Length: 406
Image 1 (spheres, one colour):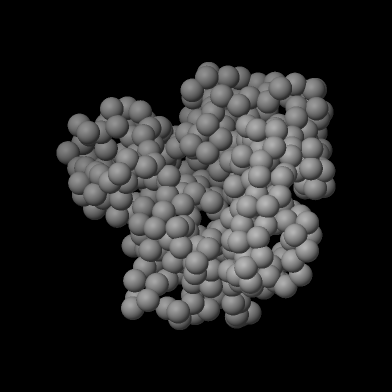
Image 2: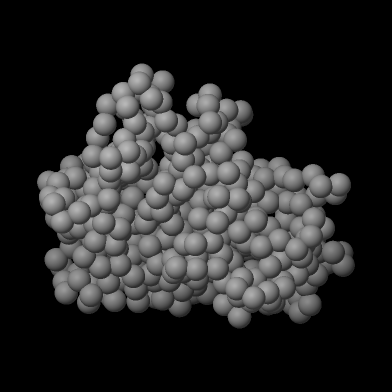
């Protein structure tokens, strides 16, 4: 089994030393952990073979903690204590959370960062995120057969200092040594370029569950240069879910949903949105806490209409990034679309119409190989003498290979 080695300048491991490190995608909706095996990046599955870990944490009775699928199964039954999409709360106060009133949580507007009241006590987003990271750490150590030296964690390029620090704090609370925070669009571009040998100027459009990142990158003979980056750290697939949720409330005439109803209808909204990726229409059914039965049909045309402003809003960071890079849409060789929300056909169409070309979608939008860390094992901070490797301006870093430990 190949091991991943990551080292600082002058501190690289001796040939006989084995250091286990991984790459972690701490996502709004799902998370995963990856390493390198036999020279190729590989996602580490759980004991049942599932690669993704839903980013959901439930604080149960008598101190029982559930993370992932087990927590997700209880989100409708126990909405106050089952935390979903916590990444959107990282480094944020209550005033920063859009539509906080429609979420089934009991927020505390604490200094520095919002907190959530659960049966296990008041929890910060850092603590909830650490439970997700701890589950991934345990999965990795069980799979690799040893203690991790550290992890490279991807973050939205548009995360501010408070959100980045919150991510580091969560990792350390989970017992992880943070080797790097790597911007997600940069990691996606590295994966795309390494896989396809592409050159030219590309846009990476990353619309995930909670954030939008747009990066303009120039790829030349293995060198990645970030010309500009933009985004919105409060715009993602969850916002599309919320539009469908509001439509359901309006159509059903529900004016004061309970916490149970809010979580149930948010779940049904997400399921309907995902179903419309491949189908022209879908039925939404639910029984609310007061016994009211909901049975509605939602079609693609309606979804497009109620989310049009959100799709248009995603193009604002695209225009800004192009302006900052001083290039026009016709100067772009391709648009790489990643993130689960880019599966929506009307999102792909809007991007294609803007650039006048079909986007590049040959990477799985949810399991795309963000893993520059596993595929480029040794990370060295660049200096003025750095002239080769994969470099970028937002996170000046040179990737240099080292022999794999067998």
